[in-house]
Image (cartoon, rainbow, N blue to C red):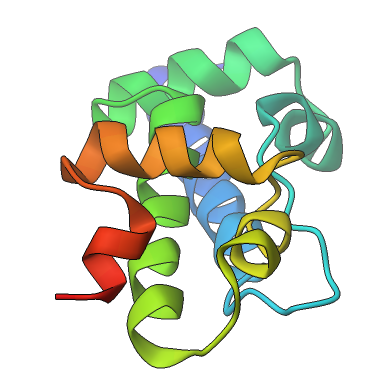
Length: 119
């Protein structure tokens, strides 16, 4: 395969990944968001390591980082725009435990979801 065609294929893979990720938003109360890189790799019919390499090369971030960034943006939106409990928000965003969500959020924002919401 020539380099130009390979670049086109990887660029298409990036776009397909971003489309799959974005299709999960906005988060819904009774729908569990997929946060696992392997879910996306399987959906795209590629190995998770290959997906990670392609995303890192094209976007400068790993699959996990891209997913986490998008989940974080959605978390902030939900905390600002809904009256969902922290537990409902956590589960909608794919966290198995509310304290995992709180830790994830605080690590990125520097304050808890409750503090963020109460500003």
